[in-house]
Picture (cartoon, rainbow, N blue to C red):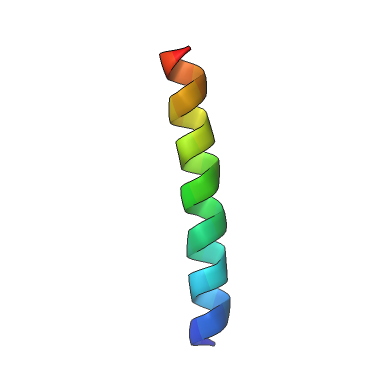
Length: 25
């Protein structure tokens, strides 16, 4: 379960990072 949560968190973080990058540009 922990692995699943970590994986999801990582995906969200990457998505959020991409969103911030898009906003910056």
